[in-house]
Amino acid sequence: MDIRVLRYFLAVAHEKNITRAAESLHIAQPSLSKQLMDLEKELGKTLLVRGKRQITLTDDGLLLRKRAEEIVGLLEKTQLELSADDSRLSGKISIGGNPSDSVLKKATALRSQYPDISFDFYSSDAIDVLERLDHGTLDFAVFLEPIDTMKYEYISLPDASRWGVLLPTAHPSAAKPYIEKQDLTRFPLIFHRRAGLQRLISRWAEADISKLNIAATYNVINGSPARFVKSGLGYFLTTEDLLSSAFDEELCFRPLEPPLEIHYALIWKRYASFSKAAEKFLEQFY
Image (cartoon, rainbow, N blue to C red; front, side, top):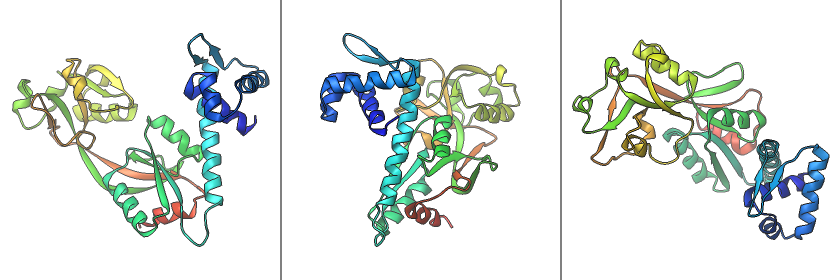
């Protein structure tokens, strides 16, 4: 596969339209269509469903889009690193996960010293972030401890946050300053689908996960979780750092009692080959 053709494929996947993709690429539409048909022939797979109004991706097309993004991203990242001016420290540092306050402060401090360094933050579910870390399109990721030390190096971060529940202010349990174990087992909960986090809460509540009333699960929340609670679907089990500093009067956050905290770590792949910029960023933490 030619990297140029992968870029063409990604443009079509993004635009969902051959004409618009050809315009964005500054090539003729018939040429682009032929390149895509040749790609499908080379792979022996149908990648695109050509509808009247828009193009959609088949399952094979979705897989290729994911891999093509990783391949093109890694190539561009390598080109930037190799073309960097040796006389000035520059480059892009890619960090996955939810950047903690300490990571953002270190990034700010590094840029104040080396303004030609920039950062790219990538947010997705844990599986996707770890895949990108393994493939090298991400330099670092911010993850909850404990860390798989067989695959990753890490530095524990000073950031910590309390587990608790976002619930309606009018709910009887909101009259108390905290949520106890017996309360949690009675609530309809909206909770992260990550198995490790579910086991953590299950151990805290001293109840099998099947005994908890989980109304819904999620992998990544875009925007405020408040709308889930307001819908009446359930109460949001989360950590305080992931919530806005202010709620409207209809909702409140109550921490778990006894307290349950999470701790973050900056992780990277074992035996990773870092750019000079990434090495300098890591030095900020020692």
